[in-house]
Image 1 (spheres, helix red, strand yellow):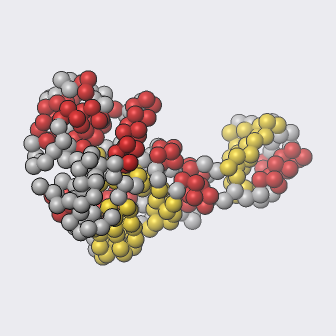
Image 2 (cartoon, rainbow, N blue to C red):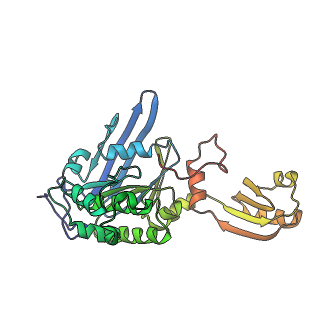
Image 3 (cartoon, helix red, strand yellow):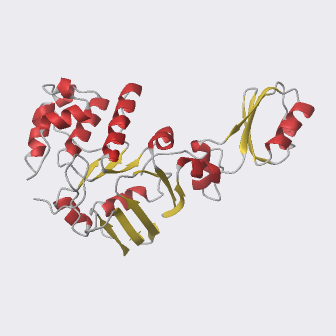
Length: 325
């Protein structure tokens, strides 16, 4: 039976052998693969009950960091604890579960059989019926896994992760394959779990999910944390606004002469200009071109992602956002 203290996700109490309110604590975390420095000194604290999005472009070090949190890889330097314990100890006590996008499933057995088989691995577990209801798959319990859609299989992985009633849940692209309704229902369930004390760390390429559902967003670039805050704080770090207008017959010379432009994007007759001085851009377009239907908007989470995670040598207008690796 777990050594426990204050109330946890489902009315149980968290297995806090170390007596800490931190779900994850990392100090000076580094990971090298030969001459490749995948993680370059990450300091990180995530408190119990937080929903945290962990984002960055390809090769940023996200997966390597998560592997160390899960005890799948040892750091080259630094230390990480999970619920006051070593990662492997926390996992051995059933306190941590992960939903990985590429996790394999046995295709020739049913959804219920998959959960019963997985549940047999735990000394303490939530009932199969309870996790099926929580994951929204009660109606497909008798369906063979190979007959489930991609979204249903992802919900099954979520149900499998809930079987041990974990206090820390790590999600990799959790809503891949789900439709809009499925994603909304999934995040509603996650929010309910967080209010009961469960901690959620997730990576996603749906940046709007991070914007809407995360309490905190952590951005990593080249193995280092470059931003950590609420969605509003992250967006505020990407200074400036976007000016969008329809500009018939605009010439390259006119675009090159736009004042205070950080970047200029032309698609047909639609011009999008990022600038820290949107008034100057708007004034130029309205007086020096045939622009109409002009709009000025604050930068969104995607703009912030690109601005904060693009390498110095990258063109920020072409950086691909969000894929987790």
